[in-house]
Image 1 (spheres, rainbow, N blue to C red):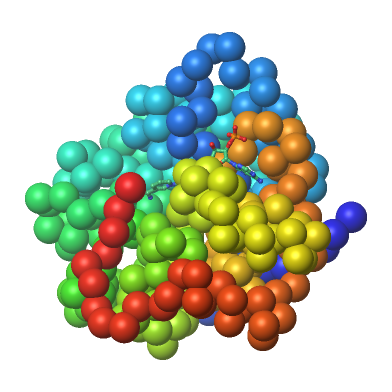
Image 2: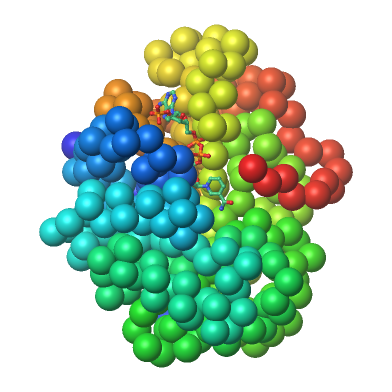
Length: 285
Ligand SMILES: NC(=O)c1ccc[n+]([C@@H]2O[C@H](COP(=O)([O-])OP(=O)(O)OC[C@H]3O[C@@H](n4cnc5c(N)ncnc54)[C@H](OP(=O)(O)O)[C@@H]3O)[C@@H](O)[C@H]2O)c1
């Protein structure tokens, strides 16, 4: 089987950050349609078998249903997994974050979340959410914490708090059609040795049907989705979390780990999806 490559969770100030799979699995829009439930659980289990043992979920997804589905998919395998979940901004006060995490733990049927993220910035001050993350870490309920959908100015503000140094990642929209972060956020995070977690890496499936990308993929004997993933996977501080329900999609995504893009391929991709020439606000889905 293809060996999974990893990304180091540096978290400045934390000694000896551990490594996590570079390719994980998303769960947004799972647990929404009962008819798909069996296939969704089977897809996550297949992904785990293939080594995609980082699973991204959130209290928001299917109003907690995706966490419950994740619990079912990982039953008996908890120790092999790196579980990521998120608190909604509307719950991100100190008390709200702690109780939201406890609800997530119950739905996930586990005693700990490996990485707990603030889903996007809300009205409670970041310092309050950090108080809660600290409390949850001390109680052993979360192992690492991070953020999602924060732009450079928010990340800089976070870095002003001494605890900001232990922020493990920022999960943001990043794929061939959403390259804005390459101008500022990605280099900034690289400097802090904080990996990016790229969500919607296949642009919610739209890149799979992209005509120009299909032409490049054909030359590489690959699928467009695989090229989109390989383009992200080649970057040392990027973790990708595609969501797939179809067995074929799970297998294809895993096989993207072996697809190597050469200088000519990267130049063709740059022509098709030009890198940013100026700063732009962080996009969100
Ligand atoms: N932090 C945030 O605000 C945020 C926002 C969005 C997403 N996320 C996270 O990121 C994960 C991934 O993003 P996403 O679900 O929005 O989009 P995505 O992973 O880019 O795309 C998912 C779609 O692509 C299809 N697909 C997967 N593999 C494929 C392949 N090899 N060929 C063709 N189509 C393929 C899936 O179809 P099937 O399911 O039918 O296989 C699904 O329709 C989410 O599930 C969630 O965990 C986080």
